[in-house]
Image 1 (cartoon, rainbow, N blue to C red):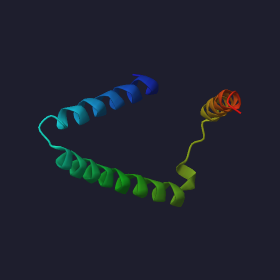
Image 2 (tube, rainbow, N blue to C red; image 1 turned 60 degrees about the vertical axis):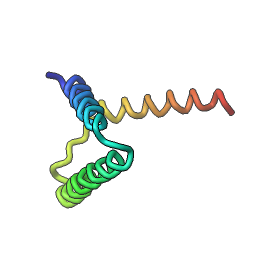
Image 3 (tube, one colour; image 1 turned 180 degrees about the vertical axis):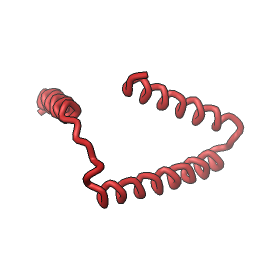
Image 4 (spheres, rainbow, N blue to C red; image 1 turned 90 degrees about the horizontal axis):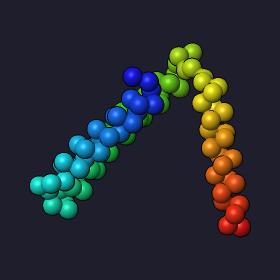
Length: 84
């Protein structure tokens, strides 16, 4: 499976899991569970960011991805300029 499809599949799985969890929970329970899961995610994000910062040799730069991001930024700026 290519990375784009894999990312979309994992995002969809996350949506399904999240949507299924709200079924039997009231708003307070949903909030508590959501905050707990966000805390778990923050720990994972923080740890991986620190590891990446300490091991810069493991970082791979995908110049195609950088160009894609630049194009997206230009497109966003172009759209925003229509409202100024």
